[in-house]
Amino acid sequence: MAFEGLVLRPYRDPVGILTVCYGETHAEMRTYTPDECRGMLEASARKHAMQIEPCLPADLPAHVYAASISFAYNVGAQAFCGSTFARKLRNKEPACAELSRWVYAGGRILPGLVRRRAAERAMCEGSHVH
Image (tube, rainbow, N blue to C red; front, side, top):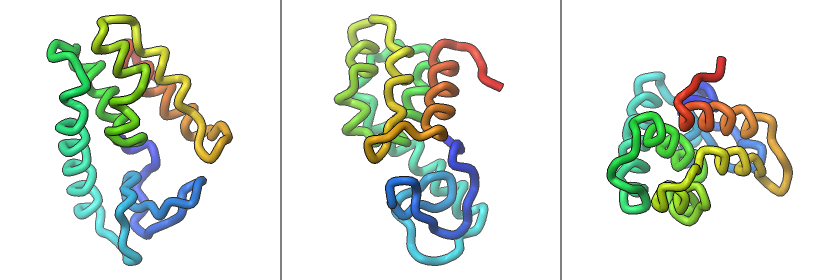
């Protein structure tokens, strides 16, 4: 979930959303500490995991679950739960390739999202991207 990298001062992402730390979108206009950012990331990961639990089968492999949390952290729990990716997971269908479709923001393909989805897909499939 650290695809955005650590940024201690709020900035506007490619579609204009105020963002800070590792991709948090509830930023105040101030400088954050690395410890605050780590805490925010951990809290967000737990929150997104809890929010997507009802949308997932109980027996997901750990690497698929981790990829799901990363994806939900980026797109939000509502978009995650409504996605073909989540539906396919629930239906025990091959789903990881669906992640590669989520590379658009503001109507255009963003290279950062292409990289992020490639890493999430590799995680989902149980392989690694270097």
